[in-house]
Image 1 (cartoon, helix red, strand yellow):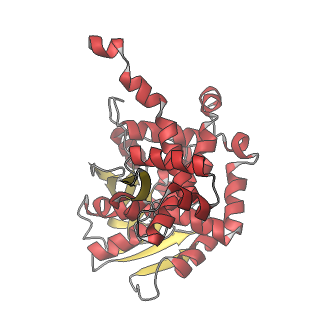
Image 2: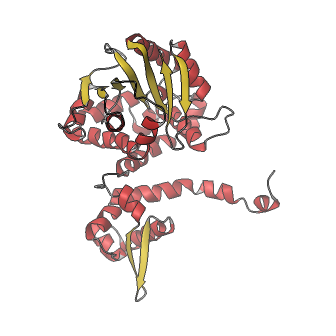
Image 3: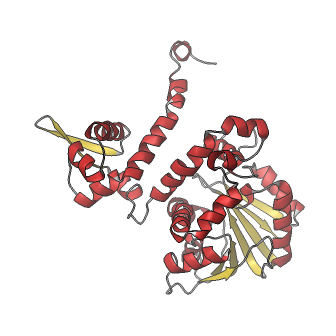
Length: 346
């Protein structure tokens, strides 16, 4: 039951209405380089100085900076009735492009790709399919083929995929005891962010990242140092190429991309390559069984509709996929962060 106050003034609905204004403000400050400039100068500076350095109007920049102050992304100091702006600690760590823990590339992907697709959410609901073609004039396959042809674009995409493991990777890897698995394949492991978390936690294990040739070449060049002896690479397409035998297969943010049929096809193929006593670890966001939340997972599931042919699932849905593929003793562990762990054994 709603309180009379909520019916008199629907604050929650108003907050929801403003949601995209908040995200686009943050995205724009990232894209224009506001946080990077403030990190570079290392002292509070005025809106006029920031506008001049970034090639923007003073009026527009001042409004953007003030909104970022309100969102607690920036701090402001008043001296002689003039405002001087600087980064907050959180912005310094997560929104400065050069920070080791930056989420800048994630913000750009959301702003330039996801934001565009979500403009066509009503059509996605009506048609039940991805809206890449409407958003960009080409299919998602063609878009990613274009990304893979450009090293700069692929690198930005891989930074986006990598960045979440800075804040969630350790929790996922440590959610379940995986110490018995020594030969590990990370299928679609991209930049190696999760593989690095695995070998730092389980010292006796080695991880091989299996991904498309261009991804592997870029990961080796930019993400995994030559000194990392416990991480190896294999170029290949896990749907079409043989999957080598291993103790454990990791699939992080893979299963949610696909239909039930394709998920079963891939999981059964993995089951054949899995050694007796081995397993498969799925890393995904989980929906509550009663469909009550979490809201992040529910929004992610909508996002899978507008971008892919997949969806987010409940623990019982993942359990069924795994058992129908031959796995048993399914364990599901929520981490308290975005991504959770589901382990099935052979």
